Length: 145
Image (cartoon, rainbow, N blue to C red; front, side, top):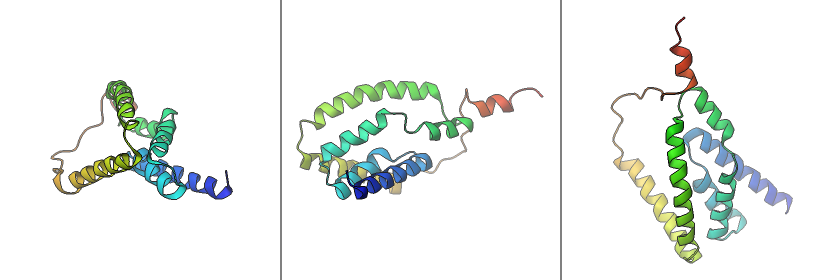
């Protein structure tokens, strides 16, 4: 692996990590296109690499920051994670049966649909959401003192 490749990988990881901590995205949205565009990965190689990165606890420091502020509901995390495991298995089986060209198109369509929905069809939130239950910040604030 060349120094230039290592530098590109470090930049991709840093940008993905910053966006993950900032707005909760980074893996597929940043890493997959970057690996395809800058390093010549196939769509399937980029997606597999992105999934390999998610396998490890790469977001643990960001998770700890959100947890400290009371913004993680672990019941929700566990339920979605269990479904994600099954969905990831089924999605990967489907993706590996499609050509790279079709996978690029599927990926692009998903990104377009999400971005259009967020830009034009999301309704404004009516009230502020309180921190979630079972979090440190609530436990500290609710202690009699």
